[in-house]
Length: 267
Image 1 (spheres, rainbow, N blue to C red):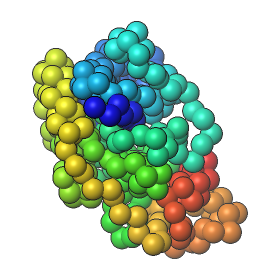
Image 2 (cartoon, rainbow, N blue to C red):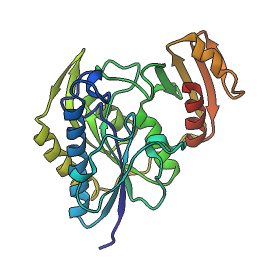
Image 3 (cartoon, rainbow, N blue to C red):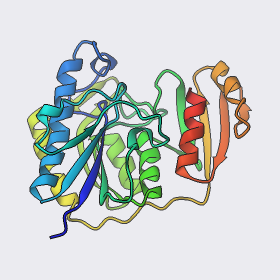
């Protein structure tokens, strides 16, 4: 059997039970319990990969990028912590050596009503992001970047909204919803059940052929911001054009270029 290496990008807002912003902010009420469950769900995915005879690298992609408790992951798992000042952001480190990309704890995008924690990259600055006329999530950005690096996106867990959107963007991707959301409430799987289901779903994903995501020839990015000052400041980049007081746009030829300019706009 060929030994493969898989890449996991992990976030926190899509983890089961996580419902309020205080639970995802370091030092906030409920944060410690949330990071334990984040680690438990990542560990479940790692177990499925390792038990199948493969290797796995985990990218902590939430806020400080120092949330996952490494000692709770299976022996041999490599963990990337901290930010790398890299256009890949939550996908920094991914390359064509990986057989597949998996996403744990992901969440619905800014501009949607599918999670009380819906946002895209920066909850304080961004109202919504559209790519080629369609609402885009962090999964959208990250799976496009993975495809640019030659890596198929094969699995995602998180709220039901992001799982549905991922299935629309990549037909055949294996999904595992940890919760459903209504307004500011969440209906959650039991923490251990969520981990068990993730493990089973990942075992399915690594044995299922899933097509590479197609990358459009150009990416038309529309960025609506929460403050007009941010939109105005972003015009210092010659690639950015103004649409309205709070909205700017730009055209990118690749996911990496799209990420670099998007990061410039959000500061």
